[in-house]
Image (tube, rainbow over all chains, first blue to last red; front, side, top):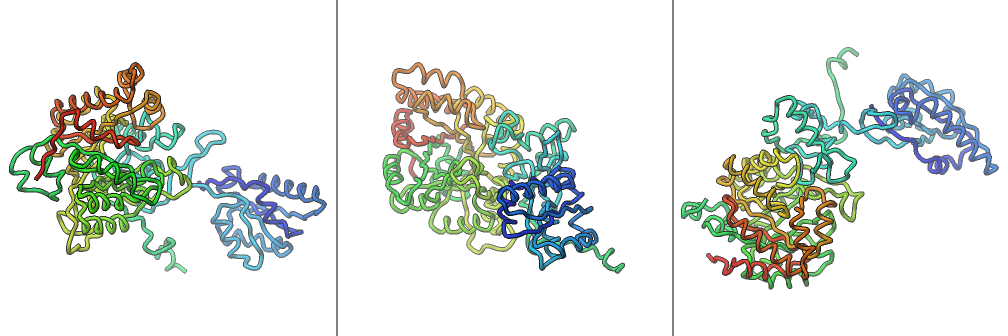
Length: 222
Length: 315
C-alpha cells in the first residue's frame, strides 16, 4: 500500500489560516489502512482545527467527508456538494488523491494534510517499511523476492557494498542490509548461483517523462 | 602474473600497471582533497610522496563530504608534480552520463588509473539531505570502463572514436559481510573488467589472510592484481573507534592493544604498518600495498622508506 503520515497540525493550520469554512476530505483506501487519512483521522483533524481556531477567537467551520478512493474520478464526484460550500479543502489522501481531487475541482484550493512516504507494508503494530520503489522493471526473480532497489540504501544491483556488516546497512544499525537479506534468502533456496550474474546498468524508464500506462485491450472497448 | 608478456601487452600503459605487470611489489599512496578551493596540502603531500610511490589515489568526496574534485586534484598531481594519479570515482554523485563525460576529460588530460567505488552513503556526510544518484553500481561502472576501453563503445552502445583506455581498479572489502559473498563479489568485479584491486584497509591481518585463502582457492589472484590496503592509525582511541563505530571495518584486538601499550603511539603506528607490509609481501597473491594515511599523508614516505620499498621501479 501507499504509506502516509499526517502533517503536523501547525503546518495545516498555516495552510487554512485565511479561510472560514473548509472541508477535510478523507479516503478509505491506503491511508485508512495506515491510519493517516481515513474517516477517523478526518474527525480528529477537523476537531483539532476547530479547537485551535476557536482558541484564537477566529472560529472556522469544518465539514468532514470520506470517500472510497480519491484516486478515482467516480468517487471524487461525491465531494461536489460539500466542495461547493467551502473556501478550501484539506485532503488526507495520498499525494495521488490530493492531486486528482485538485484537478477535478480547479476553482477550490486543495491542501495536503499528509506526507506521502513510500510503498510499503505494515510489518508490525504501528510500523511500516518500504518494499517497492515502482522502478517499472521488476528484478525480484533474481534476488530471492527481496528488492535491492527499495531495500538497499544505494539501490545496488550486484551485491552489498563494503558497508554491510553484521547484517546491518552502513546508514544505520536499525536498518537491515538488503543484500544480506537477499543472500540469506537465496542461500535458503539453494540459489546462491544467482548472485554470480552481473546485472547490467538499469533502464530507469524515465525517457518519456512522467510514466503512463495505456492498455489498448481496455481502451479499444470504449 | 609476472613476465615480459604482460609488459608487452599493457591495457593502459600507466606506471602502476607497468610496476604490477613487471612483477614488482607495488606501492601506492593516497591524498584526500581538502574542503577548500586550494592546492596547498595536495602540493605538500605530493612533494613528500614523489619518487616514493607508484601512483597516488585521490578520493572522491570521501565520507560524502564536499571536497575539491578528485579529477581536479589528479590533474594538479599530473601537471604540477609530474606524478601519476589514480582517480577514484564513486557512483553516489553522478549518473552514467556525467561519469563517462568526466572520464573522457580525465583520459584526454593523461589520467590512466581509475578506481571504481560505490561511495559512502550520503547520510554520512555534510549534506545528508541530498539525493544520492546511484544510477549505476560499482560493478556496472567497471563494465562501462571496460566496454569503452575494449570495445570503444559507451554504455549506450554508441561508438566512442577516441576511447579512454584506463587501467581499471576496484575495491574489495574482506571485512564486510556476508563474508562468503565477498569472494563472489570480487570475482564479479574481475569478470566485469577490473584489472587491479585495492582492499579496504587491513586492521585485522588474520581475517585478511583467511580471505586470501579463499581468493587463491578460486584462483582470483591469477586474474587480477591485488594491492592490500593499509592504514597507519596514529592514536589508540581512533583504533577503538574504528573497531566499533565504522561500518564495514574490522580492527583486531592485537592492533588496538599494540597502540594502547606503546609509549609513542605514532611511532608504533608506523611500526605496525611496516610489519603489515612485510606480512603482505609473504602472502601469495598479494601484488602490492596501498597506503591510506587518512589525515596523516605526510607519514607515507617514512613508511615506504622504512619498509624497504625504495627505490621505486622506473620505466
